[in-house]
Amino acid sequence: MVDSRFHPSDSQGLHSLASLAAAVGARVAVASEGDWVVTSVAALESATPQDLSFLSESKYRKILAVTRAGAVILRTEDMEFAPNHCRLMVSDHPYRSFARIGQILFPPLRVPNGIHPSAVVDPSATIGAGCAIAAGAVIGRGVRLGANCQIGAQSVIGDQVELGDDCEIGAMVTISHAILGNRVKLQPGVRIGQAGFGFIMDQGRAIPLLQLGLVILEDGVEIGANSTVDRGANDNTIIGAGSMIDNLCQIGHNVVMGAGCVLSSQVGISGSVTVGRGVRMGGQVGIKDHVTIGDGATLAARAGVIGDVPAGVTVGGYPALPLKEHFRQVAMIKKLAARGRQDS
Image (cartoon, helix red, strand yellow):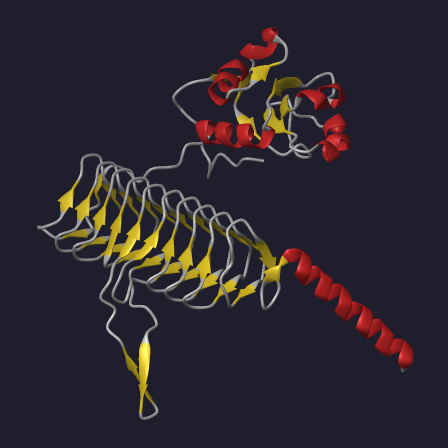
């Protein structure tokens, strides 16, 4: 259920089922029902007659059959399993349609435009039109904010940092030594541009190396809460356009990541790793330094990657191997263990 105290719906007007279907490339099964107004969304199990829900997989048809939802987004082959009271929106990709409708009904809350009296903005900073800077934020010397940027409470935008248009920076974020493209979103607690973990041993003592590069976040990058992206040592750390990084991830210095990558929580990437386009990483993946991950590769959860991964290959385990080979080894170990118990 959507709690309107924290997720107020769009106040600009009413959204009919037909207008939302048109907006996401779907269709209403019965034209006369297209005028029904959608005010909220919910899962099939908890939906009320006022809610729009969805069925993404046919294996959940039993739940569909008993839902109380006023309308459901589903595929053509699932229509006959819906209860009679349900209005039906037909889509080839119900989950995708549901997600897009959610964005229409519940647009992100904006920090009020303008600069809060408690914010500290250096006189040399350039603030674009329509920007919102919340309480306690600090905007450093020479900073450039594009149009319609939002800076959350107590966030620090360090000297000379540049943000493109429509960036959303959550509360208590720190950014230094970085250039951000348009529509970059950083959740609360993100750290961008701090010195990477580089040192040389000298007579049993670790001597830190200078970290002289930047962080480049290209257009549409989104980074989850409390994740970190270190600046480069000599070259730049680059996160490709449209990449999505979950909470609690660590990206080391000099990492170069292609466009459209998706990283789940607690991924750790060591320095100087090259990641291709469209790479997917499950939770707690760890990658050794100076490794190359090819375009479209998939790293299964908790994979320990210590060597290059070819394009399009799925790997898992530690050390990471092609997934079939990994499962074959796991099965062999189980057989050996079972044989050992029998021999004893």
